[in-house]
Length: 402
Ligand code: PHE
Ligand code: CO
Image (tube, rainbow, N blue to C red; front, side, top):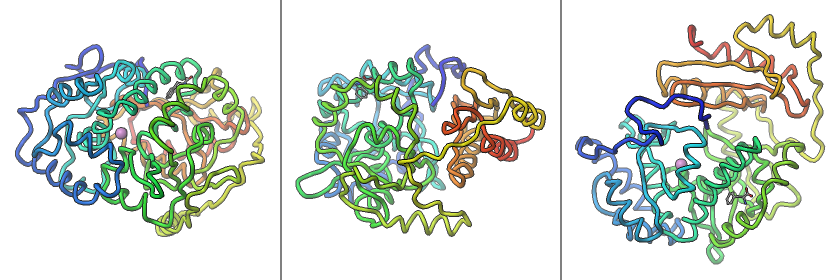
């Protein structure tokens, strides 16, 4: 989630890669990997798609300790021509896509601390390597990941990264797959999470809906909690065929003029495997004192009035940190934090606030820098909603972050 204009950290190569420095992992860090691995290994076999378990075996990931990227790459190279390379954290979108398009998977090299055992905001080596790498040993999935990288570079050119990112989210990160009469896991965000590995398959709360390319590219997703909807593919072959054989350009153009779909919605056109009760999300929302928005009709998007030029100037006068971006018809603010964690912490709090009103910022984050645009798509420009959100963000942004 970032732009190529930002600086890369010192010590990183032009393509943002860094050495893994495997020798520097402590015994405690290896033990953390083993703990997480054991916990997932004990319950995944009957839940995860068999190709994932095949990948763990082919890549010899069942051995103890944090894997070495050079060994993984050697085995992956033989299986599907992929490699695993280390990066300092989130990298600019283009760098990420460029690596995927060249069959290189970028992974974080740090591992979570004991306090972060069950919940972690930024992906660590366990998520990146245990979650993502096994399926890269599968030829069809490996091709999908490369095609996605090429698709990303193309989507960037159309200004449609948000739509494409949703496809990644609901397949690569949180995808389910049909397996005979049963559903199985394959998304990396699920298989690397103890709680979500159960929730995604067994809980009555979330929707489980048939894969629908355009519908997914219009659907919001949650970054702060378990998903409210999961999408089920028929097979990796089908996923690859549908995405490679579809020209996304006309879809992007249509989606730009259509309202996004909330995370919990079931549409009449959905192929429903399970209609979620949303009990989990509702209980969470009530517990945190949040107003649960429930179903929002999406067939008739509510039009919102844009601000007049005068209203806009008045609003900006009261929001000194913000400017108006004419091209994007959006309020714009840039923030610099102490480090990535600080940036990510504030982003998480902003996202939670945004969820309350279902009005979301567009942003790009590289390391400690965050750029934010606020606009209202149903108004085609800034509206009252953006003024409110700008105030919320100003309240959450630390003093001096400018
Ligand atoms: N077919 C997509 C396009 O036209 C590219 C793509 C393929 C994207 C596979 C994602 C996955 O842009
Ligand atoms: Co991931």
